[in-house]
Length: 333
Image (cartoon, rainbow, N blue to C red; front, side, top):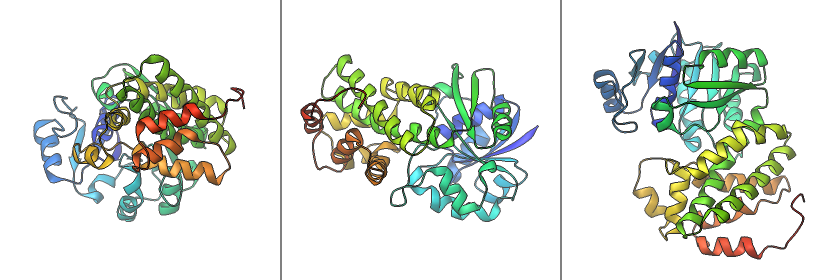
């Protein structure tokens, strides 16, 4: 069996560790808190993030960074995107020079406007042939329960993408390969922002016509920015684009949709953050995606208005009114 290190024992890092174990890998899962490590190793359960899910014997947890990284030919990162650079800077001295480094994160860094693959390259010096991303309609609880799902494994080196595909292919998880790292990352980050907007519409009491309209215009906005930056438009029509968008916007398991619903019901961002330990990436990345779109001259009303609501500059109802009041135009403009 080959060893994979997973840094981040939240719900998604733990769920993907199950995928990797089912695919025939030995998995060392790094957790920041010792009580999470003890629960996983002693009880075979991540009580805080995936209660009730029995973890395979091939998963071992540790708080020791060096132990986690030692001997791994693939290193997976699954932490909140806005703290990733600091975390990776801490971990980088323990990483060997040859493992493939893979991001499960779906965000754009505030300030730098870097995607997570770019952060990996900057901090570790790894080339594009050693950096991959995995993105798709992958709600952690359903993945952990081994419900059938598919995803995209992207790397600039197609052979490396195929290797990663083979290593995370399990009876319930079907990965497809891509070389469009940029498109996969932007699709994954932007769908969180659209999920917030859809959640707000639901929280305001609107129905399927409204949510379908927000989803569709959000996808158009995602595609505008991604294509401006050089992504393959077909990526946005696939699992890392439309697929992930549908899952995030339609499921009550989605953190971002749930966060948006609470905003639509009148709660403030601060109140929502205080009520949960789960991270809604879109609540942070809306500002960076708005800035990225503005920097590239791309019209991005969904990111703009979601950012304003999250920051408390307008209400969810103000956002819906502002979208409806925009000038009419051709759908393909």
